[in-house]
Image 1 (cartoon, rainbow, N blue to C red):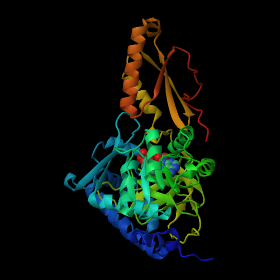
Image 2 (cartoon, rainbow, N blue to C red; image 1 turned 120 degrees about the vertical axis):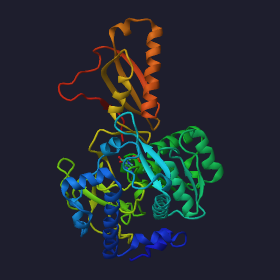
Image 3 (cartoon, rainbow, N blue to C red; image 1 turned 180 degrees about the vertical axis):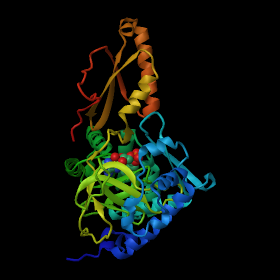
Length: 445
Ligand code: DLL
């Protein structure tokens, strides 16, 4: 049966922004090419490091004549953001920038991203389309429990939900009991947060004697970290909501690069703004649809900080064929893993190398450390076990406490989340014969 897809999502009566989701493919490709040519020209004119890389390849923007030519363009990697910290990749003058966000880099400094007014509008519009695709609309009460601040989750979802015309409850993360009280008292109909935080809320609600199934909550828009079909089933069984996967990353825009529709058969990429490719993560060679590899994204309309062929390090597949929902936007499979060592702890990105950076700042520790990840009541916990020098170990208890505090402070500062610190005697952390095994992950999915 052919359904009227726009009506089916409830989008037609809430926001015209969902219409681009159904653009005929040929028209969409034409638009993408025009935008690709414009963004490459803009980056070439305004962003010195990009221009230098194009020059090295002997490539000029006008040589990008078709979408297939995208493979001729140089990649951008996370390191480029670090090397040009903070503003070296901006294509707009600061007078046109209206927002800055930041995400973890691989060492002590974050990576910085910028938005012009138009960028914020595009970001809002893709989130409106994402939320409309989840069946949400004006009249819904949407609680945003992603963190507000430098992290893109909170404000991104907030603008999207408001743009949709819904009533937003901007709780940000934490304070589970209050989250549950507001969900109940306000009659919240949709929740935006990380999937593990929602698992935690389910457990906590049960302890408080609140049955999630009795709440008017009908949708959850979960992302910022990998999750699985079994987590979806658990969430849906415990709370009778429909759980949606939403994907994004700060470098590209934040949440809203892609999102599931009600068919739950992959995440539609908002392709009129973000061009997806899959490449072999070792060689960088493009891979055909249906093959698993690293997702590479190009921003087609970003003004303040265009990203050309950004290596996301996220491993997925572009799903062949069109979705039954009628959207012409291509879909990616859910992201289960990354090709680098980035960890996501309670939605916050953490690189083991950041832990090293923090430890190096503190005297009395040895370069042997281990990260232990566990899940307690649905929430990720991270413990950093650090070997300390024999002198320190034999010293008075006061010195150990002082060291513990300095380490805790340094880790809090560098990582931006609270982790546990355990001081251990020299030579107690297992040595590896090859690459050091820094991370022991005891979280189960
Ligand atoms: O996590 C943006 C976001 C906020 C997405 C809220 C969805 C919801 P970053 O902090 O820059 O941005 O982290 C981006 O998180 O490269 C993935 O590795 C991971 N990630 C994000 N969404 C998903 C998802 C935000 N749905 C990094 N599934 C990305 C799996 C995800 N991993």
